[in-house]
Figure 1 (cartoon, rainbow, N blue to C red):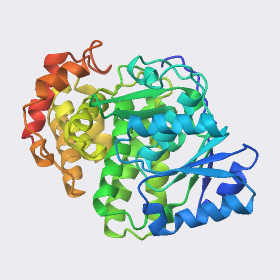
Figure 2 (cartoon, rainbow, N blue to C red; figure 1 turned 180 degrees about the vertical axis):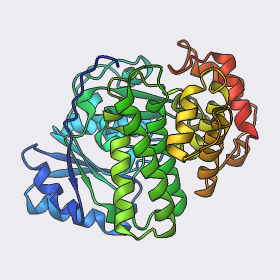
Figure 3 (cartoon, helix red, strand yellow; figure 1 turned 120 degrees about the vertical axis):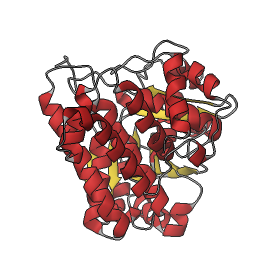
Figure 4 (tube, rainbow, N blue to C red; figure 1 turned 60 degrees about the horizontal axis):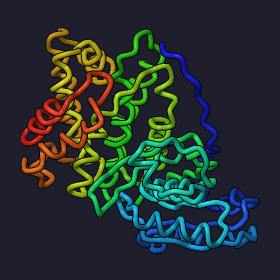
Length: 386
Protein backbone atom coordinates (compact mmCIF):
# COMPACT_ATOMS: atom_id res chain seq x y z
CA UNK A 1 0.00 0.00 0.00
CA UNK A 2 1.22 3.50 -0.91
CA UNK A 3 1.49 6.35 1.60
CA UNK A 4 -1.37 8.82 1.25
CA UNK A 5 -3.10 11.86 2.66
CA UNK A 6 -6.83 11.98 2.09
CA UNK A 7 -9.39 14.66 2.84
CA UNK A 8 -12.82 15.18 1.33
CA UNK A 9 -14.32 18.37 2.66
CA UNK A 10 -17.52 18.32 0.58
CA UNK A 11 -20.73 18.40 2.58
CA UNK A 12 -23.19 16.03 0.90
CA UNK A 13 -26.88 16.88 1.30
CA UNK A 14 -28.73 13.86 -0.07
CA UNK A 15 -32.43 13.20 -0.42
CA UNK A 16 -35.86 14.18 -1.68
CA UNK A 17 -36.36 17.90 -2.10
CA UNK A 18 -32.78 18.63 -1.05
CA UNK A 19 -32.50 21.44 -3.62
CA UNK A 20 -34.63 23.60 -1.31
CA UNK A 21 -31.58 23.88 0.95
CA UNK A 22 -29.45 25.66 -1.68
CA UNK A 23 -30.13 29.11 -0.28
CA UNK A 24 -29.27 28.12 3.27
CA UNK A 25 -25.98 26.59 2.14
CA UNK A 26 -25.07 29.69 0.10
CA UNK A 27 -25.80 32.10 2.93
CA UNK A 28 -22.69 33.78 4.32
CA UNK A 29 -20.58 33.62 1.16
CA UNK A 30 -21.62 37.00 -0.22
CA UNK A 31 -22.76 37.41 -3.81
CA UNK A 32 -23.35 34.15 -5.67
CA UNK A 33 -22.89 33.31 -9.35
CA UNK A 34 -25.62 30.89 -10.44
CA UNK A 35 -24.05 28.79 -13.19
CA UNK A 36 -26.00 26.39 -15.38
CA UNK A 37 -26.42 24.91 -18.86
CA UNK A 38 -28.69 25.61 -21.80
CA UNK A 39 -31.98 25.93 -19.96
CA UNK A 40 -33.14 22.42 -19.13
CA UNK A 41 -33.28 23.35 -15.43
CA UNK A 42 -35.88 26.00 -16.33
CA UNK A 43 -38.02 23.50 -18.23
CA UNK A 44 -37.88 21.06 -15.32
CA UNK A 45 -38.76 23.67 -12.71
CA UNK A 46 -35.48 23.22 -10.83
CA UNK A 47 -34.33 26.76 -11.66
CA UNK A 48 -37.41 28.25 -9.96
CA UNK A 49 -36.87 26.12 -6.85
CA UNK A 50 -33.22 27.13 -6.52
CA UNK A 51 -33.95 30.81 -7.14
CA UNK A 52 -36.79 30.75 -4.62
CA UNK A 53 -34.43 29.17 -2.07
CA UNK A 54 -31.78 31.84 -2.68
CA UNK A 55 -34.28 34.68 -2.39
CA UNK A 56 -35.79 33.22 0.75
CA UNK A 57 -32.37 33.39 2.45
CA UNK A 58 -31.64 36.87 1.10
CA UNK A 59 -28.77 35.69 -1.10
CA UNK A 60 -27.82 38.14 -3.83
CA UNK A 61 -26.97 36.39 -7.10
CA UNK A 62 -26.07 36.83 -10.75
CA UNK A 63 -26.42 34.26 -13.51
CA UNK A 64 -24.18 32.77 -16.19
CA UNK A 65 -25.72 30.08 -18.37
CA UNK A 66 -24.68 28.31 -21.55
CA UNK A 67 -22.57 25.37 -20.37
CA UNK A 68 -22.55 22.51 -22.89
CA UNK A 69 -21.25 18.92 -22.66
CA UNK A 70 -17.44 18.97 -22.85
CA UNK A 71 -17.53 22.50 -21.31
CA UNK A 72 -15.74 25.23 -23.18
CA UNK A 73 -12.89 27.54 -22.23
CA UNK A 74 -14.55 30.59 -23.79
CA UNK A 75 -17.42 30.52 -21.28
CA UNK A 76 -14.99 29.88 -18.43
CA UNK A 77 -13.08 33.05 -19.30
CA UNK A 78 -16.35 34.97 -19.46
CA UNK A 79 -17.24 33.69 -16.00
CA UNK A 80 -13.86 34.68 -14.58
CA UNK A 81 -14.30 38.27 -15.72
CA UNK A 82 -17.81 38.36 -14.27
CA UNK A 83 -16.60 37.04 -10.90
CA UNK A 84 -13.86 39.66 -10.71
CA UNK A 85 -16.12 42.52 -11.77
CA UNK A 86 -18.99 41.61 -9.44
CA UNK A 87 -16.92 40.43 -6.45
CA UNK A 88 -18.50 36.98 -6.45
CA UNK A 89 -18.07 35.00 -3.23
CA UNK A 90 -19.33 31.56 -4.32
CA UNK A 91 -20.24 29.84 -7.59
CA UNK A 92 -23.37 27.67 -7.43
CA UNK A 93 -23.34 25.09 -10.22
CA UNK A 94 -26.77 23.65 -11.03
CA UNK A 95 -26.44 20.78 -13.47
CA UNK A 96 -24.26 17.80 -14.25
CA UNK A 97 -20.52 17.29 -14.33
CA UNK A 98 -19.96 19.71 -17.20
CA UNK A 99 -21.57 22.58 -15.28
CA UNK A 100 -19.65 21.74 -12.11
CA UNK A 101 -16.35 21.44 -14.01
CA UNK A 102 -16.98 24.80 -15.65
CA UNK A 103 -17.72 26.35 -12.24
CA UNK A 104 -14.49 24.92 -10.81
CA UNK A 105 -12.45 26.33 -13.67
CA UNK A 106 -14.03 29.75 -13.18
CA UNK A 107 -13.36 29.49 -9.44
CA UNK A 108 -9.68 28.77 -10.06
CA UNK A 109 -9.22 31.46 -12.69
CA UNK A 110 -10.92 34.19 -10.68
CA UNK A 111 -8.09 34.18 -8.11
CA UNK A 112 -5.23 33.66 -10.58
CA UNK A 113 -3.22 36.47 -12.16
CA UNK A 114 -2.45 34.53 -15.35
CA UNK A 115 -4.62 32.73 -17.89
CA UNK A 116 -6.79 29.97 -16.39
CA UNK A 117 -5.70 27.61 -19.20
CA UNK A 118 -2.28 27.46 -17.53
CA UNK A 119 -3.78 25.08 -14.96
CA UNK A 120 -4.81 22.74 -17.75
CA UNK A 121 -2.08 23.06 -20.37
CA UNK A 122 0.83 23.34 -17.92
CA UNK A 123 -0.71 21.02 -15.28
CA UNK A 124 -0.23 23.61 -12.53
CA UNK A 125 -1.81 22.58 -9.25
CA UNK A 126 -4.68 24.84 -8.25
CA UNK A 127 -3.82 26.33 -4.86
CA UNK A 128 -6.51 29.01 -4.55
CA UNK A 129 -10.09 29.10 -5.78
CA UNK A 130 -13.44 30.61 -4.99
CA UNK A 131 -15.73 28.20 -3.16
CA UNK A 132 -18.08 26.16 -5.34
CA UNK A 133 -21.43 24.62 -4.43
CA UNK A 134 -23.43 22.22 -6.56
CA UNK A 135 -26.96 21.02 -7.17
CA UNK A 136 -26.47 17.80 -9.11
CA UNK A 137 -28.83 16.79 -11.92
CA UNK A 138 -26.92 13.92 -13.55
CA UNK A 139 -25.27 10.96 -11.83
CA UNK A 140 -22.09 10.49 -13.83
CA UNK A 141 -18.89 12.50 -13.56
CA UNK A 142 -18.52 12.61 -9.78
CA UNK A 143 -17.40 16.23 -10.01
CA UNK A 144 -19.70 17.04 -7.09
CA UNK A 145 -17.02 15.77 -4.67
CA UNK A 146 -13.83 15.48 -6.74
CA UNK A 147 -10.68 17.57 -6.98
CA UNK A 148 -10.73 17.76 -10.79
CA UNK A 149 -12.08 19.94 -13.58
CA UNK A 150 -12.02 19.01 -17.27
CA UNK A 151 -12.34 21.78 -19.87
CA UNK A 152 -12.14 21.92 -23.67
CA UNK A 153 -10.30 24.65 -25.56
CA UNK A 154 -12.51 24.60 -28.62
CA UNK A 155 -10.12 26.76 -30.63
CA UNK A 156 -7.32 24.19 -30.34
CA UNK A 157 -9.45 21.03 -29.96
CA UNK A 158 -7.76 20.24 -26.64
CA UNK A 159 -9.58 18.64 -23.72
CA UNK A 160 -7.46 18.72 -20.55
CA UNK A 161 -7.85 18.50 -16.79
CA UNK A 162 -6.73 20.56 -13.81
CA UNK A 163 -6.83 19.54 -10.18
CA UNK A 164 -6.42 20.75 -6.63
CA UNK A 165 -8.03 19.97 -3.31
CA UNK A 166 -9.49 23.49 -3.21
CA UNK A 167 -11.64 22.57 -6.22
CA UNK A 168 -13.77 20.16 -4.20
CA UNK A 169 -17.20 21.78 -3.80
CA UNK A 170 -17.85 23.00 -0.26
CA UNK A 171 -21.31 21.45 -0.51
CA UNK A 172 -23.20 19.33 -3.01
CA UNK A 173 -26.94 18.77 -3.06
CA UNK A 174 -28.00 15.38 -4.41
CA UNK A 175 -31.68 14.63 -5.00
CA UNK A 176 -32.17 11.43 -7.03
CA UNK A 177 -35.62 12.69 -8.08
CA UNK A 178 -33.89 15.24 -10.32
CA UNK A 179 -32.60 12.40 -12.51
CA UNK A 180 -35.96 10.68 -13.12
CA UNK A 181 -36.58 12.27 -16.52
CA UNK A 182 -33.09 11.90 -17.98
CA UNK A 183 -33.06 10.23 -21.41
CA UNK A 184 -32.00 6.58 -21.25
CA UNK A 185 -28.88 7.24 -23.31
CA UNK A 186 -27.75 10.04 -20.99
CA UNK A 187 -28.31 7.78 -17.98
CA UNK A 188 -26.27 5.05 -19.67
CA UNK A 189 -23.40 7.42 -20.47
CA UNK A 190 -23.31 8.48 -16.83
CA UNK A 191 -23.18 4.87 -15.67
CA UNK A 192 -20.25 4.16 -18.03
CA UNK A 193 -18.41 7.21 -16.70
CA UNK A 194 -18.75 6.28 -13.02
CA UNK A 195 -17.83 2.65 -13.70
CA UNK A 196 -14.75 3.88 -15.56
CA UNK A 197 -13.76 6.00 -12.55
CA UNK A 198 -13.63 2.86 -10.43
CA UNK A 199 -11.80 0.84 -13.10
CA UNK A 200 -9.12 3.53 -13.41
CA UNK A 201 -8.35 2.99 -9.72
CA UNK A 202 -8.88 -0.76 -9.59
CA UNK A 203 -6.27 -1.53 -12.24
CA UNK A 204 -3.28 -0.33 -10.26
CA UNK A 205 0.38 -1.40 -10.03
CA UNK A 206 0.22 -1.03 -6.23
CA UNK A 207 0.42 -4.18 -4.13
CA UNK A 208 -1.15 -5.10 -0.77
CA UNK A 209 -4.33 -3.14 -1.43
CA UNK A 210 -6.85 -5.83 -0.54
CA UNK A 211 -9.22 -3.47 1.27
CA UNK A 212 -9.60 -0.99 -1.59
CA UNK A 213 -9.70 -3.86 -4.11
CA UNK A 214 -12.77 -5.16 -2.30
CA UNK A 215 -14.26 -1.68 -2.04
CA UNK A 216 -13.80 -1.13 -5.79
CA UNK A 217 -15.31 -4.52 -6.59
CA UNK A 218 -18.30 -3.84 -4.37
CA UNK A 219 -18.97 -0.45 -5.96
CA UNK A 220 -18.65 -1.91 -9.47
CA UNK A 221 -21.06 -4.75 -8.65
CA UNK A 222 -23.55 -2.27 -7.21
CA UNK A 223 -23.31 -0.03 -10.28
CA UNK A 224 -23.93 -2.97 -12.63
CA UNK A 225 -26.85 -4.31 -10.60
CA UNK A 226 -28.61 -0.98 -10.15
CA UNK A 227 -27.89 0.17 -13.69
CA UNK A 228 -29.88 -2.77 -15.02
CA UNK A 229 -32.71 -1.99 -12.64
CA UNK A 230 -32.82 1.74 -13.30
CA UNK A 231 -32.87 1.28 -17.07
CA UNK A 232 -36.05 -0.79 -16.62
CA UNK A 233 -37.60 1.52 -14.00
CA UNK A 234 -36.19 5.03 -14.54
CA UNK A 235 -38.65 6.55 -12.07
CA UNK A 236 -37.69 4.28 -9.18
CA UNK A 237 -36.24 6.46 -6.41
CA UNK A 238 -34.24 3.72 -4.72
CA UNK A 239 -32.47 2.64 -7.92
CA UNK A 240 -31.71 6.24 -8.85
CA UNK A 241 -30.40 6.88 -5.33
CA UNK A 242 -28.01 3.92 -5.51
CA UNK A 243 -26.66 5.11 -8.86
CA UNK A 244 -26.30 8.72 -7.71
CA UNK A 245 -24.40 7.79 -4.55
CA UNK A 246 -22.21 5.37 -6.53
CA UNK A 247 -21.22 8.18 -8.90
CA UNK A 248 -20.04 10.28 -5.96
CA UNK A 249 -18.15 7.45 -4.23
CA UNK A 250 -16.55 6.41 -7.54
CA UNK A 251 -14.75 9.75 -7.89
CA UNK A 252 -14.34 11.38 -4.47
CA UNK A 253 -10.93 9.73 -4.09
CA UNK A 254 -11.63 7.22 -1.34
CA UNK A 255 -11.33 4.21 -3.66
CA UNK A 256 -7.87 5.35 -4.72
CA UNK A 257 -6.38 5.72 -1.24
CA UNK A 258 -3.08 3.85 -0.98
CA UNK A 259 -3.10 3.08 -4.70
CA UNK A 260 -1.37 4.42 -7.80
CA UNK A 261 -4.19 5.15 -10.26
CA UNK A 262 -4.10 4.59 -14.01
CA UNK A 263 -6.22 7.08 -16.06
CA UNK A 264 -4.93 6.01 -19.49
CA UNK A 265 -8.44 5.27 -20.79
CA UNK A 266 -9.69 8.69 -19.72
CA UNK A 267 -6.80 10.46 -21.41
CA UNK A 268 -7.42 8.54 -24.63
CA UNK A 269 -11.13 9.33 -24.51
CA UNK A 270 -10.42 13.01 -23.95
CA UNK A 271 -8.88 13.10 -27.41
CA UNK A 272 -12.04 11.57 -28.89
CA UNK A 273 -14.14 14.25 -27.18
CA UNK A 274 -11.76 17.03 -28.15
CA UNK A 275 -11.75 16.11 -31.85
CA UNK A 276 -15.27 14.74 -32.27
CA UNK A 277 -17.26 16.17 -29.32
CA UNK A 278 -18.62 12.74 -28.41
CA UNK A 279 -20.38 12.07 -25.13
CA UNK A 280 -17.68 11.20 -22.58
CA UNK A 281 -19.42 8.06 -21.31
CA UNK A 282 -20.00 6.77 -24.83
CA UNK A 283 -16.34 7.27 -25.67
CA UNK A 284 -15.29 5.42 -22.54
CA UNK A 285 -17.60 2.51 -23.38
CA UNK A 286 -15.59 2.06 -26.58
CA UNK A 287 -12.11 2.77 -25.22
CA UNK A 288 -12.17 0.75 -21.99
CA UNK A 289 -12.63 -2.73 -23.49
CA UNK A 290 -10.01 -1.98 -26.14
CA UNK A 291 -7.58 -0.80 -23.46
CA UNK A 292 -8.26 -4.00 -21.52
CA UNK A 293 -7.61 -6.17 -24.58
CA UNK A 294 -4.26 -4.48 -25.03
CA UNK A 295 -2.91 -4.38 -21.47
CA UNK A 296 -4.30 -7.71 -20.22
CA UNK A 297 -1.72 -9.55 -22.29
CA UNK A 298 1.02 -7.97 -20.17
CA UNK A 299 -0.60 -8.11 -16.70
CA UNK A 300 -3.45 -10.63 -16.60
CA UNK A 301 -3.69 -11.13 -12.82
CA UNK A 302 -6.01 -8.25 -11.96
CA UNK A 303 -8.24 -9.17 -14.89
CA UNK A 304 -8.81 -12.61 -13.39
CA UNK A 305 -10.00 -10.95 -10.15
CA UNK A 306 -12.13 -8.55 -12.20
CA UNK A 307 -13.89 -11.45 -13.92
CA UNK A 308 -14.42 -13.46 -10.76
CA UNK A 309 -15.22 -10.79 -8.18
CA UNK A 310 -17.19 -8.34 -10.32
CA UNK A 311 -18.85 -10.53 -12.95
CA UNK A 312 -19.04 -13.85 -11.09
CA UNK A 313 -17.03 -15.89 -13.61
CA UNK A 314 -16.18 -19.35 -12.26
CA UNK A 315 -14.14 -20.90 -15.07
CA UNK A 316 -10.38 -21.24 -15.44
CA UNK A 317 -7.92 -18.39 -14.94
CA UNK A 318 -6.97 -18.75 -18.60
CA UNK A 319 -10.55 -18.05 -19.69
CA UNK A 320 -11.27 -15.47 -17.01
CA UNK A 321 -9.37 -12.61 -18.63
CA UNK A 322 -11.44 -12.60 -21.81
CA UNK A 323 -14.62 -13.39 -19.87
CA UNK A 324 -14.27 -10.25 -17.77
CA UNK A 325 -13.57 -8.04 -20.78
CA UNK A 326 -16.50 -9.53 -22.69
CA UNK A 327 -18.79 -9.06 -19.69
CA UNK A 328 -17.93 -5.35 -19.54
CA UNK A 329 -18.39 -4.91 -23.28
CA UNK A 330 -21.71 -6.76 -23.24
CA UNK A 331 -22.88 -4.67 -20.28
CA UNK A 332 -22.21 -1.42 -22.14
CA UNK A 333 -24.06 -2.75 -25.17
CA UNK A 334 -26.95 -3.84 -22.92
CA UNK A 335 -27.23 -0.21 -21.81
CA UNK A 336 -27.48 0.89 -25.43
CA UNK A 337 -23.97 2.32 -25.67
CA UNK A 338 -21.74 1.99 -28.74
CA UNK A 339 -19.21 -0.84 -28.99
CA UNK A 340 -16.88 0.63 -31.61
CA UNK A 341 -15.44 3.92 -32.78
CA UNK A 342 -17.37 3.45 -35.99
CA UNK A 343 -20.49 3.24 -33.84
CA UNK A 344 -19.95 6.86 -32.75
CA UNK A 345 -18.97 8.04 -36.22
CA UNK A 346 -15.21 7.96 -35.81
CA UNK A 347 -12.86 6.51 -38.43
CA UNK A 348 -9.14 5.90 -38.45
CA UNK A 349 -8.14 9.24 -39.98
CA UNK A 350 -6.97 10.94 -36.77
CA UNK A 351 -5.77 7.90 -34.81
CA UNK A 352 -2.09 8.78 -35.22
CA UNK A 353 -2.65 12.41 -34.23
CA UNK A 354 -4.71 11.48 -31.19
CA UNK A 355 -2.13 8.92 -30.06
CA UNK A 356 0.62 11.48 -30.47
CA UNK A 357 -1.16 14.10 -28.42
CA UNK A 358 -1.96 11.59 -25.66
CA UNK A 359 1.71 10.76 -25.24
CA UNK A 360 3.38 14.09 -26.07
CA UNK A 361 4.50 14.48 -22.44
CA UNK A 362 5.59 10.89 -21.97
CA UNK A 363 4.01 7.45 -21.52
CA UNK A 364 0.35 7.24 -20.58
CA UNK A 365 -1.10 5.40 -17.59
CA UNK A 366 0.42 3.56 -14.65
CA UNK A 367 -1.01 0.03 -14.61
CA UNK A 368 0.84 -0.54 -17.89
CA UNK A 369 2.85 2.31 -19.38
CA UNK A 370 1.64 3.15 -22.88
CA UNK A 371 3.60 4.82 -25.64
CA UNK A 372 2.29 6.29 -28.87
CA UNK A 373 2.31 2.91 -30.62
CA UNK A 374 0.30 1.35 -27.77
CA UNK A 375 -2.34 4.06 -27.90
CA UNK A 376 -2.59 3.70 -31.69
CA UNK A 377 -3.09 -0.04 -31.30
CA UNK A 378 -5.81 0.51 -28.69
CA UNK A 379 -7.65 2.90 -30.98
CA UNK A 380 -7.27 0.47 -33.86
CA UNK A 381 -8.80 -2.23 -31.68
CA UNK A 382 -11.65 0.12 -30.83
CA UNK A 383 -12.48 0.75 -34.48
CA UNK A 384 -14.37 -2.50 -35.00
CA UNK A 385 -14.04 -4.35 -31.69
CA UNK A 386 -17.74 -4.92 -31.19
